[in-house]
Every structure is written in structure tokens, then in C-alpha cells.
Length: 145
Image (tube, rainbow, N blue to C red; front, side):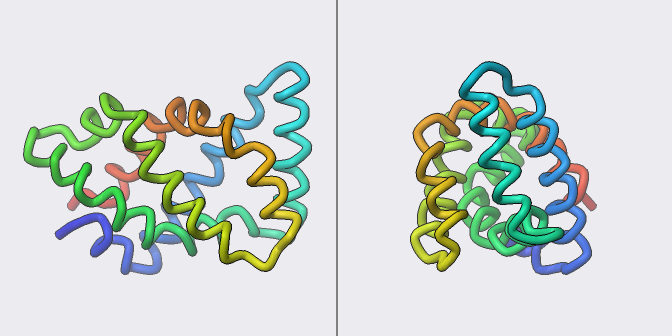
């Protein structure tokens, strides 16, 4: 059973989305300087799109993201450490996730969200790579068993 199978459970999907949203809040809060201020502002604008927008958006993208991550997760399972595998391959993990978000952002009708995403797209890969250990632990905590 792969990640994409586990995410079919609505409760698991909602719990992962909530934990990922908390992780995003933590990651954004650590940003400093002018670029950090700009990111915090843009993130605040996106969060202002509606209460629960971030967890909801994450929940909607999780099925595609987990389907994309399935091969990497399975490689890690075969090696005995899926969390470690994603972390050791954090650049590949980030590229995989960004390919999903890139495809989704092209389809959004929300100009504010699209504009904010496009403004920071080039710089977010490093941020996603930095978040991979936390994301991998969250995934593991929710899908094992």
C-alpha cells in the first residue's frame, strides 16, 4: 500500500494537511531580512484568502503530491528507512513536490495566489528542501500502521 492509498482516508489527509500547515507557519516565521519580510507578507496574503485556506489547499494537493512521492517513499521502504531516504534526497523530493505545485498553480483561478506563488517560485526550492525532514516525519507518523 503506497502513500497515495493512505491519503484516501479523509481523516489521515486532514491531519497531514493540518500538520503540514503548522510546519509551513514555522518555516515562514524563521525567515529574516528583506526577502523574509516579503515572503511573510505574501504568505499572509495567501492565508488571508480565507480561514483554513492553507490546510485546505494542502489537503487538495496531497493526493497528487503523494502519488508523485510514492516511488521515492517505496525506495525508502525497500531500504528500510523511508524518512531517511526522502531526507537524503531532499533536492529530488523538493523537485517532485514543486512539479506538482507548478501544475496546480497553472490551473488556479485565484490571481493573488498565482501571483504570490510565481513571485517566490525560484527561491522556494531551498525552503522546501529545508522542510523535507519535518515533512517526512509527518508523513511517517500518519501513514505507518
